[in-house]
Length: 265
Image (cartoon, rainbow, N blue to C red):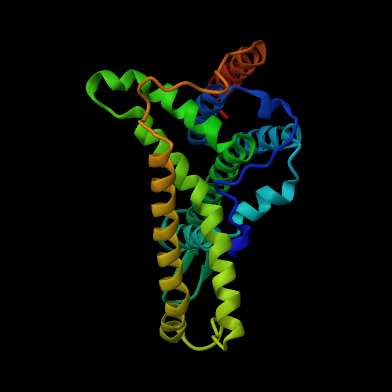
């Protein structure tokens, strides 16, 4: 399951989404999330799903990468479906087990919320897979820069967010190496009850924490020896510039939002 975690990974390709300015992509993804929450019917979700499919095709990223992003949150999605199905009253009784019942309104709400979570996860993966960590840092910093007037450290926050995303795949690879090394020494992570499995995870968690702190210390040392001083007087190798494609994408998305609001789907 760890290798299926795609958050923070960048997939290089030559597509319309890859060429968009990172600031515009962050704004569009935010509006896309708002659009997902505005939809109130299954017809609306069908429309959003079709739009998401078109975005995935235009990104030139294999669809399996987006399906892999759903595997780590499969338990959360399943729990959400079951929670609403059993505990949301209303409608016709579909399943009566005596101690619990499944009613039509609960099943409807559960499926509705499940589709919303799936679209949110795919949308988040679409941003990170089509935007490099450096570009994502510059985009977040630029969008937060107006808040510097009230003392918000925009550059530091953007840097911390990007480093956190960048460290996710690194720590996943490190955990897989440690797990294979411990299995070669006789460790078993798949047998026993929940308590035994949690106890067996100690040989994995402790080296992983040690490796994470060591990498963080090495990163801090590397930034210090290169005289890193944050965002003040900092120049960039690639300056961010809006293009016609960015404004075309924004205009199309605004038209889509107006269509959803007017049609009430």
